[in-house]
Amino acid sequence: MRYIELSKAPCNETLEVKAIYSDVDWGKRFESMGIRRGRHIRKIANQPFGGPVVIEVDGMKISLGKNIAAKIEVEVLSSHLH
Image 1 (tube, rainbow, N blue to C red):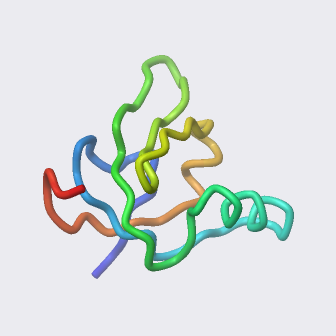
Image 2 (cartoon, one colour):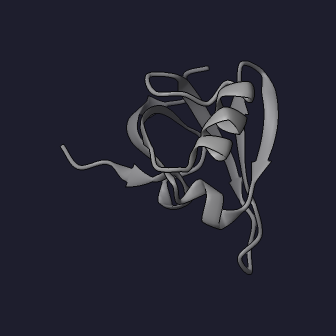
């Protein structure tokens, strides 16, 4: 199955992080936010006009710039699971 960029994933769906394409510094940042391969997250919002992508990880809301969110590939698992 082909995965999609987090920035293009649908909102209010349970997503599984499949791949992260970043340098070491961003990799550490993602890890500190709880974003890692195999983790289930939920995309809450995609702000208009190139604004940030808002996700929920372990009940915590995180805003990521659209270019940063594009470095994360996810698989849509199912809707409305938290």
